[in-house]
Image (tube, rainbow, N blue to C red; front, side):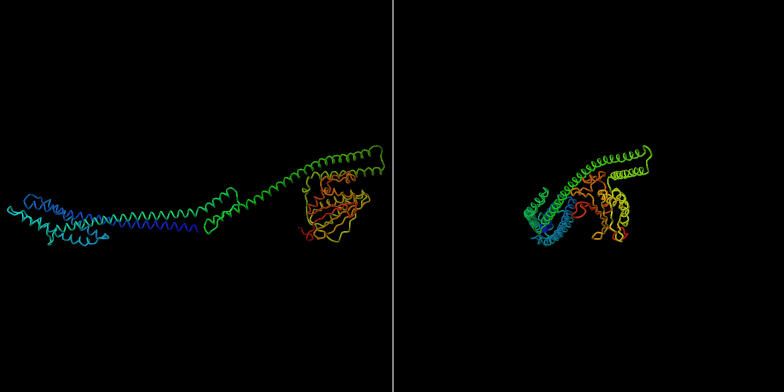
Length: 538
């Protein structure tokens, strides 16, 4: 809308300027015509005056010649030639004036000039013939006769008085000159007023357009300037209040949309910054906790190394002492040697356990254990683990009872050796913390949803205190009752078992007492995912 109004005003100004230029051209052409008519009228007037003057000079020469007072023939020829030239110029100027056309009050002189020039042309011819043929007067000739001859030659032509004719033409051309000069002055005055009027009109139109557009531009530009200043100061909630169909409304809407978009970006940036700060704080806390955990782990590791060093020293000393005592003195009976070897075997088994704990501790992370996973029947590593665990259980007079397995094949994805190690760790834990003549039950069954396999190991041992259950999977942790029941141990069995279960995408849970309403015993539940179909790799 505003662009259209501005375009209309510019078109109007251009039209006024074009009209002013066209009027100036027309006025200039009219002035040029007036000046040309005035110049031609002045030249014709001068031509008649020169014709009259030359005729008078030729008459004076002829008078001198007739009275015998001299008169050079060359001068006569010059004067005659001048008459002819002047008459030819008058003919040319008359034709040019006719082509230019009469003025507003002219036209009569254009009709009179050709007739007068025709008469003058005949008279000049007659003068030329008479002057060349006229001889000097006799001495006894009277002055009246001489004057009469001169009058016939110079004053009378075709019964007309040439003096009166020339005087009439001079008077007429004088009036024409005055008239054309007045017309030229009037044309110049009109042109001057035309220029002044058009300049004033153009100035009025330009001034009106300036005032109008100044008022029309002031308010929207002020609003846009305030909006831009608000954006520069960061006040993104500022909105430009300007509505209408013009271009300023479009700009205002665009700036408002830009401010809204920037405000949304700022809000998102603020939210992301707060989120990042929260994440940094969380990562800092995690790092601090990890550092604390690492520090505690290092402390426990140092304690474990000290304990393991002591434990290694004790069984090796016992082995050496038992062997030295047996070898000293006289020969002993077979029963005594067998008893000594049995004690050496027991001590070696204890030493083997300590060495295994030390090797497990050397692996700072169970994730570094290499697993060769493939589809297998879980009952196979379970049976291997039961065979080894029953040999250990006989030493402590503990029975391991296994619920008969269904006639099914339980397919899981795992490492047979590591699964056997995992089950053996759980069985060894249940046996070690059971009372003599106690029992350990093993049960294998599918979960309620049929997607996993549950291995449940229940013992009648010392159990785990409720406040110690959350810490049983931490490395080197051993409860007070566990240390009293079995001093030897490193607290690595359950953490290793949990790591192995997680490595097989399973889980391990402990609960104590083993049965609801009971007072002792521990229940270990190992859950491993079943393959969708027998023998199929996930």
